[in-house]
Every structure is written in structure tokens, then in C-alpha cells.
Image (cartoon, rainbow, N blue to C red; front, side):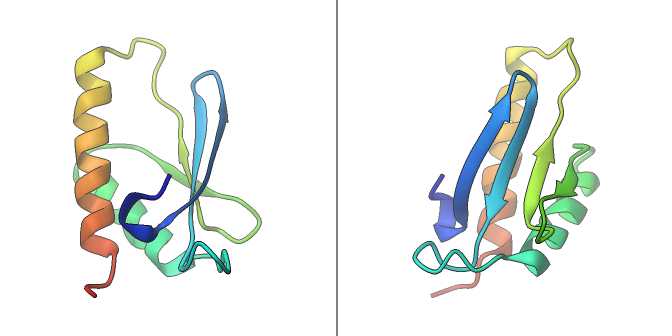
Length: 90
């Protein structure tokens, strides 16, 4: 939550996680375009994620059950990089 100003709400159960992207945390306006770009950039890095939510701005993270700590660290690093790249420069 709060990464590059795009964090809306994190949610999940078990290995099924969702990361909501918003344009502004105070208005919680959905960041649909940014979510679509996040999806494309993650796929380029061979990280399979999906889009969900009523507004199409929730990144669905569904890792395999054979997940290792190295996988988690690599995905977290990639997600951080992607979020920085899709966020507008201030």
C-alpha cells in the first residue's frame, strides 16, 4: 500500500491476492490505464498476473503453490520497478 502513490487497498486470502491501483488515494479514483500497463509490463518480465475488480484496476496475484522466497523477492522487486515506471513524474 502506498507505493508511488498508486496504492489503494491490498486484499487477499491465502495465495490469492489483489492490489488495487488508484489515481489518488484521497479520491480513490480507479487507475484503469495504469493497471493495464502494469499487467503488460509484468507479462514482459514473465510474471503472470491478471486484472480484476469492478473497475478493472485490481492486479490479481495468484502465485503457484511451489513458491520460494526467491520468487517472492524477485516479484516484489519487479512490482516496485513497474509501479515507478507507470507512475507520472511529479
